[in-house]
Amino acid sequence: MTYSKEMRFRNVHILSCISVSLVLGIGSAHGQQTAIPYVLEELIDDTPEVYRKELSHIYHDRQYDPLWLSPSQQLNAEGQTLLQVLTGAEQLGLNPTDYDSSELQWLQRTNQLFSEDRPVFRTNVLARLEVVLSKNLLKILDHVTSGRLSPGPINEKWYLQNERPLLTEIVTQVLASGILTTLESLAGAHEGYQPLLHMLEQYLTIQAKGGWPAIAEGPLLLKGANSSRVNVLRKRLAATGDIKEGAIIPKFDQEVQEGVEKFQARHGLSVDGIVGPRTLHTLNIPVESRIEQMLVNLERRRWMPQTLGSDYIQVNIPDFQLMAYRNGILQLEMPVIVGKPMSQTPIFSDTLEYMVFNPYWNVPMSIVQDEIFPKFQKDPTYLAERKFEVVDMDEQPMKFAHLTSENLQAGTIRIRQKPGPDNALGLVKFMFPNDHAIYLHDTPAEHLFDASERDFSHGCIRVERPTDLAAFLLNNQWSREDIVHALESSERRVLNLPQAMPVYILYFTVWVDEDGKLQFRDDPYGHDDQLWAALRPVLSSAKPPTSLFRQNSAG
Image (tube, rainbow, N blue to C red; front, side, top):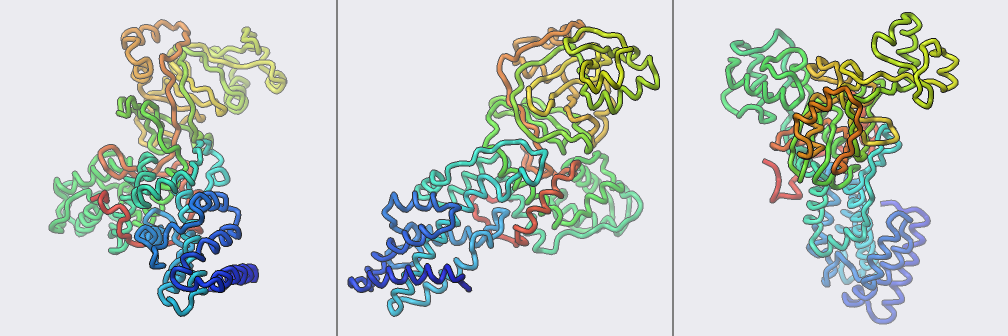
């Protein structure tokens, strides 16, 4: 290990402090024990600014009494466990080198080599071991609770806020409950984090065994086929638990078909039990790529608020699905349509406050200029046929003749579409006022929900069953018949919700569902690639771990 000139100077200063203690007659094991607090204080004062305040707070309150050293000048049981966690950080989807793993292992090894014959040197080693352990405990707790990276510089579409916890409070929890129990509770606090962490462990084990086989290109594989490619298909499906391991035979039978259907469902593919080009491509994605995808999504989980609450609506953009919860129980699920890659739906949260039955569509100026105005110039009847109207800034109707490029640039006119079944927002919109002008709404283009990948909007989110969503939000204060009647009346009506509802617009391409099944989705906006490019330099290649949380490891 090499030290900078500054570090060598600090060590000389520390050694001089220890020498004073030895002159006073405390060179024995007891003397080392007495000297360590003096050295700890010096080391903490010289620690880089990051985490120095927290270290000072922790040790000042205990008069610089060591946390991780036993009276026999060895690591105590909790110190050994902390060392194991830091040097095995890949088990948490993190990089051990971020936590001074090499220095920790050197310090521990060096401490074991020297005893009473080198008291000054050994005291210095013990004090440094103590400080490096504590500093990296703070660091790994910070990363587990808030992320290894900051989302802002990586993804300009990420606006979700996560309040950074007080690390000193978590350290208090570590001292009371132990590092493993605390890490497990932190992993459990981030919804969906711990189940994905356990699945990562399984995929690392698959990787260590050589991964899964690639299936050769060829004709469709479907029930009744007899081919050597089916042998490989069986091995591939067994590797991820979509069929049970058993005899490898070339017959595509009912078992294989059901296994393919399970695989397709877990990957957001059309479920038909046939291995066509897209299913074949997905089957052949290597385990290394899936591990990278899991590491990326674990980092996103760390960016998230620790809990979403018990009552909320969640939209997962890559899954094109909305899920509504009340009292922590899934009450409603439906397909949605999200923004196109060139008009991406942002990742954020806000509070749904009211809904509008039979709304006007106030057309965003970008859509007016890029789409509607050019069509109006080519066809003067375009607006009237689609029930658009031109209004001034006070919403007073104006003649179509006022729709000119000059007036648009001056910002003196707007275009809106009248309520009705042909309105682009459908019969209802659900409002959670935000800086992104994003909301949920109905749509007359119901055929678009038949697509498996539903990224067709300008950024807002279209819902397949708006009446069901309205009934959920009104929470039995309106009957379904009353809602349908109000929608069919064509009367515009603003309705405040009896209870405001948090809405989370999220972006996860891997998660464990409520049935314990690992789900993968494509990356429609390229956010996975973007995040992995930033994560890859700071994450080491993971290796098959022995679970930190053995009592709860997934099967």
